Image (cartoon, rainbow, N blue to C red; front, side, top):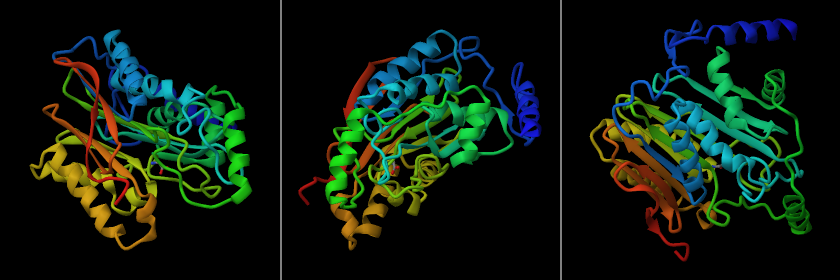
Amino acid sequence: MSNRRNFIKKAALGTIGVSTVNTWSSTFVSDQTSNLASSKKKPVIISTWNHGFEANDKALSELNIGKTALEAIVSGVGVCEADPNNRSVGYGGLPDREGKVTLDACIMDHNSNCGSVSFLQEIKHPIAVAKKVLIDTPHVMLSGKGAQDFAISNGFLKENLLTPESKKDWKQWLIKSKYEPVINMENHDTISMLILDGNGDLFGGCTTSGAAWKMHGRVGDSPIIGAGLFLDNDVGAAAATGLGEAVIRTAGSAMVVELMRQGKSPLESCKEIVERIYNKHRNSKDLNYLQVGFIAVNKNGDHAGYSLRSGFNYAIYDDENGNRMEDSQFKMSWNN
Ligand code: GLY
């Protein structure tokens, strides 16, 4: 353990200063670069669902005081993680079948550095731990007890995340214990955020408590780079919301970015992958409760959201129109 701590300490020291070379790979970890210093353009910030609105506001205020886009993502989606009334993210998130709140998150920067945590328990801000994984370790993903140990060794507090309200809902669910993943509750699910910053660089993050009443140990798409989140700084960024299993099966966010690379618009790209997911599930009973949605932004700041079912919306901030909600286009309503 002490070796591990020393290793982590050394890792942390290695990132002090401006744009330090990451000693574990040839990529750069540029979290320390101030966004303010070299801003040329205004940022574009796009986040899933209604809760994306306050997340965007927070992220923007962080960028405006010179914080990096990675820091802005951590603070922005962190608002949702800390909100006990948000039942699909962080503190207050609905638990698994055993009454445990287990959290998934990941974050990615413009140099393809990634950090991720999955099946993390009793830590309120998984996105901040994911950022620590990105900055301070040679790895991309830490899971379960290892992720929790890493968080605690970095000063994160261990706390009970099961609120009385979520516990009550779980007890109610236990009466029938009918397993059907619950997605898209009350207009929220995963919070995914994409930022095109003032330097024209792309960043992204997502965080969730996952599907309610999931099997203990289940991990969704949100901590998986390529599924819940992907970006290529030459092309664009994409992130997912909805039933993680369906997104993982199609490497959803990576595919959206690849379609943008081929010249498709963010909307065309999101739509094509939603169609692909629909085609793979159309003969499955999962279709009854299936919802997936993607947000995407390209290097020009063009953005879109598209979902399988009606009801998905996203928050978008740009300089021209400020922060607002937009309804996504969708393939079918819930009645189909
Ligand atoms: N998209 C959230 C999950 O399936 O876990």
